[in-house]
Picture 1 (cartoon, rainbow, N blue to C red):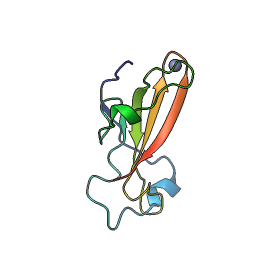
Picture 2: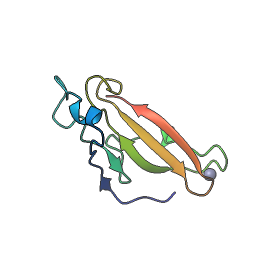
Picture 3: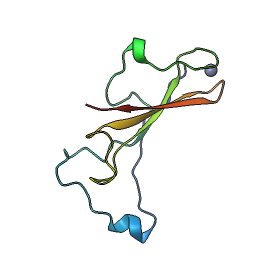
Picture 4: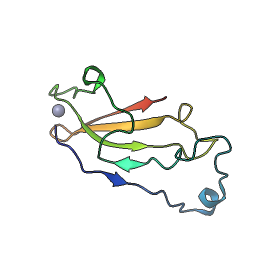
Length: 99
Ligand SMILES: [Zn+2]
């Protein structure tokens, strides 16, 4: 399993519709700002539940995490979407991690 260095992703609204979206009312300050490529997941994953590739059965590489956008597009009560990839087989898996 290869490890990708950590990149912080900063979402930039592209359309007027995106720019006009209201933000969060009740979420903690960091919610909506935890988009990331590579690095370790925001919340550790146990070895037992770390995703394995359906083709080669190897441990998949953590590719990144996606955060909520606002109260309307919120992921599982301040959760995150984790994305994993097997760079050998081009298989991907996404899971929701919620507090
Ligand atoms: Zn594989």
